[in-house]
Every structure is written in structure tokens, then in C-alpha cells.
Length: 247
Image (cartoon, one colour):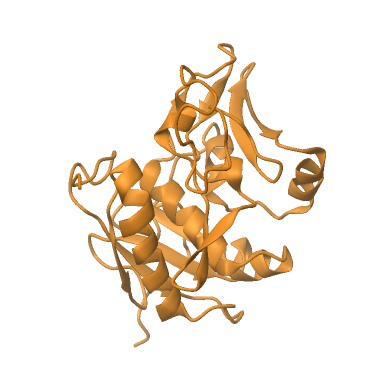
């Protein structure tokens, strides 16, 4: 297996500190979720994308580690001074538990969605051309298949696309384009998915169905990783502040 790649780890296998700051109960045991996500990386994500990682359960940020933090919602992120990077300036994923449950989604699917996208594009800056040469497509590996999930250790994990998905020279049906083998061609967006694009000087989304477009408009997307590209035009990624220990 490759040792990894990316703008941050430079060939080293990252450790990802996973910790829960949400007051809303998770709909899954955190230890079991971390174990399932580790198996998801080892058996599904890393063999395809070459992005291994080691997940560890912690109570806060850890020096030199990436992070996955569970929060109630984006407002709480502000209260905890949790921004877009760890205190060491490394990638982090934020999972908004109350927001996820209010959307009738599973925390495990939201967490694995953020995890695979962080591993594939840790700096939230990868883009590519595609079938429309006037359009730039974001390298978001779970958005086009967002509604799909599969079982890992009895817990649902997010489907994700393969590198071939972003290779528009591929012929339909010629190779596998996503983990669950539901995508038939490059840049295809499934009914429950969407794609972030940059066209005519603006970021926007293309949806796989009108139903998804309407559902997306009702969701609270503030603070999500997928929104960072849009916000990037007005601000830079910011480091989180380490939480101060009580005296």
C-alpha cells in the first residue's frame, strides 16, 4: 500500500484525533464508529486513493495530528474556537451531530463522508477540468454519491467515487467509478448527490435531481467542509485554538 500523499502529510501516514464535543447524543457508539471508520480506510479508501490514516480516540486536539471533531452545530464551532485547521495548522473534519440528525441523516455516514473527503483533498483546493471545458470541478469524493452508504462492521459508511470518476477520457462502464459501483460514467451525479463547480467566476452546485436541489436548500450547510471553497474567495483557512484547561 502506498505511504500516502497530499499537501499536508508529504508521504507520511497521518494520525487523526477523533473527539466528541457534542451535547447531542450520537446515534452510534463512538468507539464502534472509530473502529468502523478505520476499517473503512484500510479496506476501502486507502487501496483506491492511496490515503492511509490511523484514527485514535482523544478528548481534544493532539500535537501533530489531524482531527475529526463532533459538534452539535456550526454555532458551537464558533464558541469552541474551532475553525478550519487544527492548532498545528493540519486538516480537520467537523461533524455536526444535531444538524445531521435534524436532517434525518446518520452521524456515521456524515462522519465517513467528511473523512474520505479530508483524506482525498486535505487542503480543500484540488480541482479539475471535465466534460465542460468552461467549468472547473471540485475534487469532492463523496458529494456526487452523497445519498448512498454501505455496511462496515455493522455501521453505515458513505459511498465515495474513485479517481477514475474525475477522468473524462474514460468510457461509460469501462471501469469502476465508485465504491458501490452505482456510477456508470465520469462526472455522473447520482439522484441523491451533487457536484461543486466553478463557472463564470462563481462557485455553485449541480444537483443529481430536483428533489436533491430542494433538500439541499433546506439544509444548514454553514460550517461544512464543502462550503470552504465558496468562502475561500473571502477568507483564508484558519487554525483552531487549543482549548484552555481549567485551572
